[in-house]
Amino acid sequence: MFTIAVAHLQVLKYAISPMQLRPTHAVIDLAALKHNYHEVQKRLPKNCGILTMVKADAYGHGAVPVAKVFEKEGATCLGVATVEEGVELRDAGLKKPILVMGGLLGSGEEAAQVMLKHHLIPVVHSAGVIDLLEEISRRYGTLKIHLKIDTGMTRLGVTLQALPNLLARLKVSEHLKLEGVMTHLAFRQNEDYTKQQLQKFKEAGETILKVMGEVPIGHIANSAAVIEGSPIESFQTSQYWVRPGIMLYGIPPYPEYAKKVSLKPVMSLMSKIVLIKQVPKGTKVSYNCTYTTKRKSKIGVIPIGYADGYPWALSNKAHVLISGRRVPVLGRVTMDMIMVDLTDLPDVPVGDEVVLMGKQGDEKITADQLAAWAKTIPYEIVCGVSKRMPRVYKQ
Image 1 (cartoon, rainbow, N blue to C red):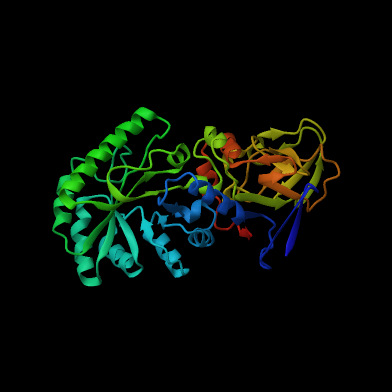
Image 2: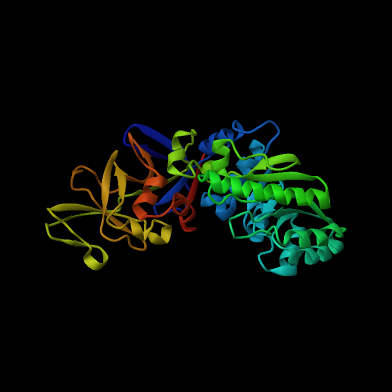
């Protein structure tokens, strides 16, 4: 076990791989993950299912360990974006239903065969894949599908105009079972646009009911809808699901939602000071000399960079936490390193802990803060943490 002292106020214990030689790593707090899952649970109507989104390597947190937590906590289904992501979970022993949100993504018969072999459920977005899935299912067995309606995202999904043609093909299919119907909210904060989407979804539902009869499952609610408590129910189905994503990882879908729900950040980014140097006033720092010291300075080097997912856009903008205090990043973020100003921390030694995202003492840096500095969204911050960054799972 490796113990990290946090500003002499908090001690965390978690297992570190003996092959992890560089001190930079992400800590994934599985207790916080469970807490956030239960925050979703307590907001739902009775018997509402939870499809936990673990696409994009569980938003950068590690799909397999995270999915195992959700499976143990009782999630109804796991959501991925690609067939490959679904196969990874199956190969790791996950048993829950897995919904592939992207469907076949143009890969045709090969993707369909892999999907059936690994018992994955495709989302269907167009009439064109119905015949292919029917043919594959005729050889391999009945395939459950979910149908996505494009109500205003203008991304994947069948339009209302194209829906009758798709249903006509699906109606005569002998081996495809329409298990669920779904859509995706484009702008939950905008009540008028959300109402327009719901109306289109209702119209689609009425058409589906006339042709196919009642569908077992309907799902529409993302993290924002879960926090608001609506829309969760859609048209007439036997069961409703919700599809929380970013809130499971302790990040509100919009900053103003932070006060509406008690979420705990799951990911922290940690490192150590590996080199300290004293430089005179007027010293240039990092590529393109974008920072010049304004006084005799103490510069610390931290082994994290944009190759790890620490955005280049944080150059000369971000802060890190050392000894419970905010310390500015100086100059450009490089591929493997950043430099920070330690001048006001004269007693800090090489090897001292650095928190790039997370809490240290009474200070904290959140994904939202990093995103604001980088002029992006917190989704991109956590999803962008690269594969070379070790994930350490804290129980």
